[in-house]
Amino acid sequence: MLAELIAEGVTLGSLYALIAFAFVITFRATETLNFALGSFLVMGGLVTAELSVNAHLGFWPAFAISCALVTATSMLIERFLVRPMIGRTLFVLGVLTIGVDLIISTLTQHVIGDKVFPLGDPWGSKVLSFATVSLPASRLSALIVALAIGVGFALWFRYTTWGIAMRAAAEDSATAALMGVRLGRVSMVAWAISGLIAGIAGMFLSTFPTLGADPTLRDVAFSTFPAAALGGFDSTTGAVVGGMLIGLVTAITQGYESHLTFLGASLHTIVPYVALVVILLINPNGLFGTREVSRV
Amino acid sequence: MMASIPDKQTLAAPGNASDPDREFLRVENLTVCFGGLTALDAVSFSVARGSIHAVIGPNGAGKSTLLNVLSGFCRANSGKATLGGVDLIQRKPHEVARLGVGRTFQQPGVFKQMTVAENLLLGRHTLLQSGYVAAGLRLPSSRLEERAARERMLEFAELFQVRHVLDRRAGQISYGEQKRVEIARTLLMEPSIVLFDEPVAGMNAYETTEMSKLLARLPSDFGVTVILVEHDIHLVMAIATWVTVLDFGHKIANGPPADVQADPVVRQAYLGTSGRTKDHTVW
Image (tube, rainbow over all chains, first blue to last red; front, top):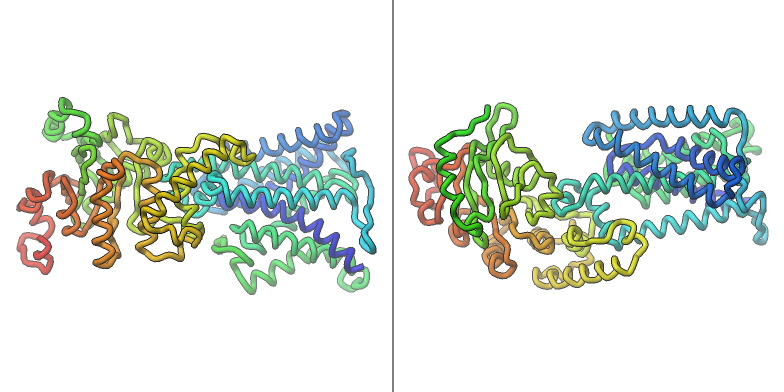
């Protein structure tokens, strides 16, 4: 039982880590907490489902278009809302993204209503078994893709001059500009990457065991904010570790909560926040963070 | 507040006719105000190509403001600054950098979280052609460019004696090393002019001597023109080929070091009217 929960936790955690990473990268580049990430996830799932099943485009083209759309949305937000506001407080930019989140989720809610949109994805409800552990094929693919994305970006940040330029801009934007780094382009690329990752994560979160794209996906983003905060808002390593941790804690709690009925039926939904509070009490910068996000 | 003072304008005018190398950098009637404070008041001077041009003056004279305007960090209210005939004013910092203007800071502007090698590679950033996508996909064109950048970086690390700390984080190396990394990085950008903001601030005597030797070699070895903002008068007198003195946003002297040193107006600005301070040995 525990082995299976851990496996489930790791796969779920890898998706949380991706979302937390998407959250951290825009924070580092533009000092913006992007609360619209939740609606990006819903968009990623919904657009894939809509185009794949209802428009008969087939899963992969639908997924590609969906990713492009979420990426474009993220870039538009950067260009027209975030960039003109650069230098304002965390608070102003945060409220702005909450507004965007409300708009996108109202639109998607309108489309979805109380229906569930299956994705028509190639994994279906296949379950793979390894000894005592069985895992949905979709979750295993999600884990592999998340790993590939994580390693890919880690290498890109580490070894390419563009990656180095982005890290430089995050550490000290004025000096980076003197090196000829275009700050506007850095922030645009950060938001594009963030949107792309949210699109991918949104699709995977809508696959089995989830029934399809539905608006509650937005809540997933809210349980990854603790993941980002836990790791330290400005640390990509922290995002990965935090995401994994939250995934594991959630899966394990969910597995055992039938034995803990006195704590209520959906303990796993609050566990991420409990973990967050405990860790931030011990270390206010998060596990890997270098600066405290100022309290508003 | 359009304070264009006619007599200063005519003072600057004869320069129009002279050759471009003598007026490689040309600052004309540059005025910068912060609120009610005029940090630079119609300042004009020119910098010859290949010279070491010091800008000195007491605290609050406007030296840092001058550097900030030239590197695009701060806007000018009026006036012009051109480098080789190209306008520098009202451009963003990255554009100024791409026009060949390098700058170093008083506190070494190294990225402390990144390794020395990464800091140096950043100097090649503007010279790379391939974009994010090509770099991300490791296309052959971008790989070749990155390899060339790396080779040049190693060359400079050797030259500035920081090869042995390439893989350390820049925050962990000594102050002098950080300064050398910053200068190496700036020169890796292949600038035509470098603005130095107090390069020996916080250095001991030995480090100061080493730095002044290094600075003196820059025009001949790297073909760069140097603008030097510095408080260390010994250093300025030893290596500068030309000196401009600012005081309260005004240019009060401009000439070869010996002339400026003998100028009574400069002495007064530095030492006050009495002329009896502990600092008088400096002069």
